[in-house]
Length: 106
Image (tube, rainbow, N blue to C red):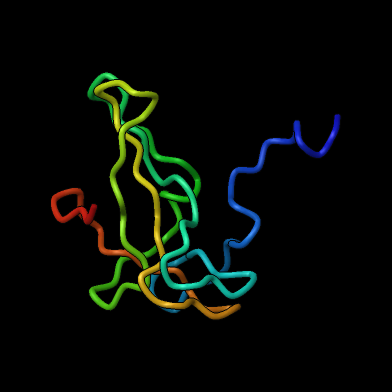
């Protein structure tokens, strides 16, 4: 199997580690620049919400360094939610986002 055929549950620039906030969390394995998209956290397909591994491991904070950004999925009424850095995240820093589907930024 070639590297391009390998499934990666998380983007290459994040990893799971012990969080001081709660249990496990996501951490940057390299500097993530402000404005950079990190990856897909959730899909809503036929009104059913699916969470990706990325969406399952980030922790909540009102002092978040990322935001969920909503977009259309495959030109349909289904949606995809991406995690986007709203400030530069340093290598080793925990990736944090507010837990809400009611305050999405476009």
